[in-house]
Image: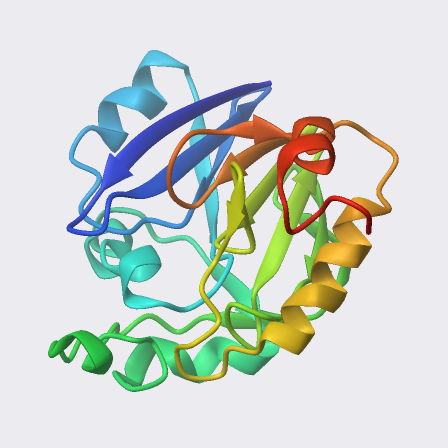
Length: 204
């Protein structure tokens, strides 16, 4: 397994390419991923799908460009399928932008999903948005804007909820495996580090 990271777009959003045994998934293409072709070719991988941790504009900004080059499905929590074409819901209207994606995403619920050659576990972790989710694969957690190094995602945008965020963080704090956390913004971290040092997780 290999993970390649690119920081994309005006809000410096982390996009990840998860690769394993000749196949790949892209998680959160926040802007145009100019060297994706090279990344896939250099690693001998075929792109199978795009996963979205949530539907905010800074995590989907490069989606339409990617889909113009790769005919692959897009997966997001069922409650946020409509966010892609709704500037208010996807947060762009709050920043005086009106971003719309024309992608036809597939809504999925919490559980284990076979996506191409990958067996992905999705945990629904509302708080940052109503459909925020994390994706687990082997030792990696793709956390989107639910959990950052030393912090958490904001909860004051449309569909955000601090009460729901607290419940989601409690769930993550109870996970036994020390996942490597691939964060939506900022540096990556580990679950054990966040349990020890993140003020939002300590004591949960």
